[in-house]
View 1 (spheres, rainbow, N blue to C red):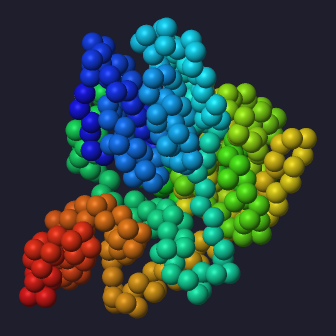
View 2 (cartoon, rainbow, N blue to C red; view 1 turned 180 degrees about the vertical axis):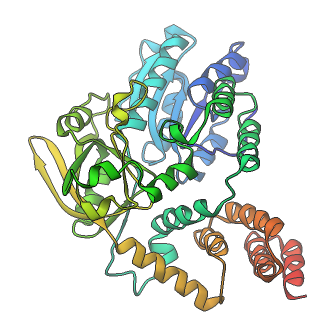
Length: 435
């Protein structure tokens, strides 16, 4: 089975089995797993497997291994935060009987592929519904620290929100996006069918269902959904039931009274009981903690921050999705308290993120005058150490940019290649920038 080089989604399934090359089912296994999760890697050598796991920064890894190999690999990865869940699968039923896994991330031991697939699917659904990724920052320290390092995730989502609204929005742009998706998911039949359905069925009226990101962000700007609510709602408290790791809970306690952003859109509900039911959902692991985000919203917060979707009327989506927060929203983390074995995390919308973004843009433009906001965004990725992503973005800008910006784009590409120790390419772009 061939391993692709890059994952553009949040979950990677890693299958480690020293005998994986001997299994006749290997090709079919990959086809079936890709209907559940697109990006899956297979290893028969432990060193290369562990090296890959250690190299991961943002993604969550679902590890599958055999009883024979488990004791060998688990002792080396049990402290790695990248490992989210562990599954044991044995083609040979006999080797499973005497094996016990003592790990909080362990889901189960399987000898039938269908049972393994079902368990993985359940955990992915739980992960999407109950687990969130957060970024924390101290608003009192941003004046004296390097913003690109301290608050990089916050800045990324706020700048991304601005950039996405400036992108071309015609049929040609839509076709370009569809072609990129088809190329990436070229042998994933399930996703290809979804892409085809999107191509034929998508319109701006059903943007929430499709999550077409530009028009979704534009909906926050236009506020069409909110107009009927302005007179009804002077203030509003909404809820989101989640699970936290013990490390996340400690982080919330540490940053009480400070600020937090959600890495993406945040869906919530006006009904506390719904959030409570989700928070109390049973999961196999005992190391996850039930919590509710309790978010107080004032009428002025509705502007560009919140969409009232009433999406919970549909059976096709989550029951916690009747309120949607924009991906660039920053929250005050006001209070954390334990109430009847549920952690209640009280928050409200803050304008501090806008202040920090403004300062970052001003600081960047002090270094390089009159930079286009798209170049500021690309340089943020460079400052964050995301060299490959920054390089791709600058290369795209280079193909669509006027001569005024071209020198700075080429200079930045020179910096990236220099950092990657590709000195010949770096010199090429530096020379072009200064000519």
